[in-house]
Length: 220
Image 1 (spheres, helix red, strand yellow):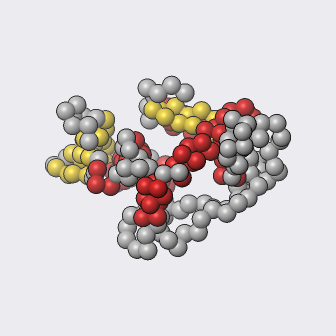
Image 2 (image 1 turned 60 degrees about the vertical axis):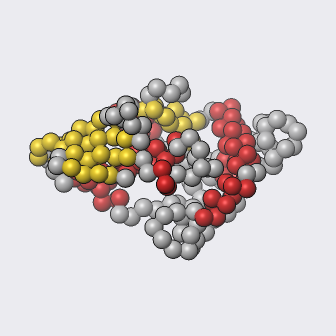
Image 3 (image 1 turned 45 degrees about the horizontal axis):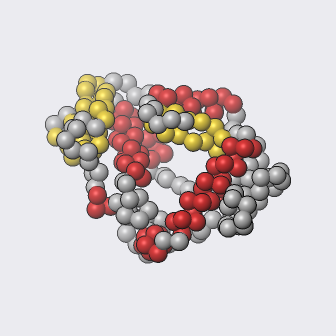
C-alpha cells in the first residue's frame, strides 16, 4: 500500500492481504511489495522524475518497507520507457519453453541487474544443482498440498471476479516433457529424492533456464 505526501511515496505491507498458510512469515508479501516498488520507480523514471529509495526507513515499523523520495527532473532511460509500457500488459506464459538456453549475454546482464539491486542471481545449470532444486521444490509442494488450509487459500486465490488472485479463466499448466520442476514427481518412492530421477538424462523437450535469486545478505 502506497501513501503519498508532498515529494515522498511510502510503501507499507498490507497484512490484510497476507496468506497465513502459504506465507506465514510474510516473505512473499514483501516480495510482492518489492514488485510494486519497482513499478513505481519505473513509472517515475519514465515520467522524467529523479528519485532515490530508502529500504526499511523506520526501524520501529517493520511494515514500512520503503520510501521513495522524489527529486528534480531527469531524462528517461530507454529501458525505463520500454519496461513501463510493459507494466500494463502482464502475462504468464504457459506454453512449452524452447530446448535451448538463454544467450550468454542476456544471462550476464540479468545477473548484473540483480547485483545493481542489492541482490544475487545464481544460474542452476549443472545436473546435480537441477536435481537438488527439483527435489527441494517437490518436497515443498508435498508439504503445502498436505495442508488443508493451504489448499483452501489456493481455491480462494482463483476467484470468479475481482482484482486479486489468478482469474478462474486461466487454465492450469498441463504436463509436458521437461527437465524442470514443472514436470511432476512421484512422491514417497523410498529413494529420499522425492521421485526425482538422479541417473537418467532429462527427457527431450523443454529445458528451461533455472536461476535462484535473493537479497545480498542471504548466502547463495
